[in-house]
Image (cartoon, rainbow, N blue to C red):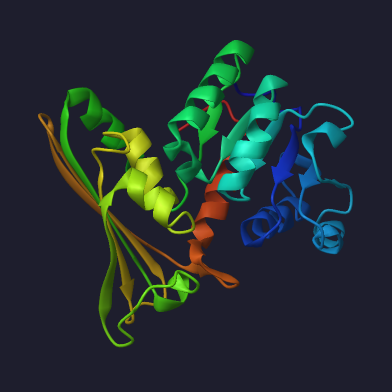
Length: 266
């Protein structure tokens, strides 16, 4: 629900890694919302104080001195499971970037129930992918297939414990969005978002590729329904300190926050 243009929404930021810092620095430079608290792991306090001198650093939702208007998560799947239920139970509208966590049907069902009881929506950030509006329209027309292909540089797969071709392309994964979210949580949030907007986790086909020729991330969607067919591809520069995450995901979060006080929405 849009707030008055004269009201600056108070925001809880969950996570202060690369995405959190992008949001924090943009908020610190001037915005139409106030980050009043940051839920961050130990070791981030100095960064938060530097970027957001007026924000309180907390380790748990229970440490919030007063309820906030809005919460936004950019901390990973574990945070969705551990933090978001408490926020929704408090009636705090919440948006999440780590949509892959919702591949867990029990967690998704619990969050849906909490959001319904509180009358508070749980928002899913589009992140690095576009076309979710037209994908949703095709869903109403009767989707027959949705394919997602994610291509990322070799550095994005560091720590994945897989053999990679150092001079070409390696298909890291082929399967469903549910399997991708579970096997590669740091690389499959886009697949999960597409699944949630379209055919679901078990009917969305996913291919993940390590491409030695790339220095950025590429996300591609193909979908077809009785209403037609569409193909979309978007390139996104990765965060400097986290090559598996696209910087535009942080700007997607900022767009959501800035929209809290606007009366016309796209």
